[in-house]
Length: 316
Image (cartoon, rainbow, N blue to C red; front, side, top):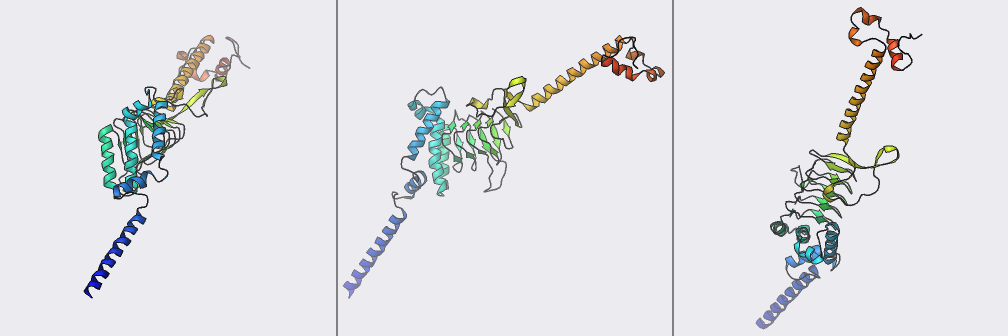
């Protein structure tokens, strides 16, 4: 009886261990043992085994396209901190997605220590993103960086709200260029192909294709000359502009100032013409005093300004 009970106990223990092992295998299909390996493969290899290498090749080609100082793929792979931090961020973001928050923050801090670029593991970064030089770049938790964006050193994609879980950081749509030292603060959207000038402080949305400069930033539009000397916004997608510099861009503030200067010059010229016409009529403004001013014929002045009356001729 004792032998039978011992055998039954051993069989029961074996079956429990077998069921437990099968359960772990079904829960971790395709992953090595250990939660770290599961996190890595689940976060990075969910689409295809070669996806991470495909994106790496894309990143290298993007850097060689946008930076004339890049002489070879090997140089880019070994010497560009913007590439290094993106590779680390993909692992950190994968950990963040499966709620391994501590590990994600540790990987993010390693990337910051090695490159001087701080990207929160919760931030979403698209494909073919180029972080040039990169020292001092800060990207917040809820920031979204679209495909083919270019970010230069000293850029901050920050938030102005303290609400936990809210959209606090900006969204950069496809092809946005952010110049060195620019600050984009708030949970708004910067439209596709927009440009943020160096050291600009952007606190409101930027339309697609526009350029924002200044502190606080104001929006200007690229322009092109057309027939008759008029200027209209350019409709075609512009070429890549390093540091967000837009050639032939019209600043609305400078246009308004130039308009006021031109208006003042025109008024001064008009006053000179009026004085000259009065002198031709033999009448001076300094002589118009008291009752003499009431006798002055405004119709004669108007006709003189129109060139209809010559000196000594009275209008009918």
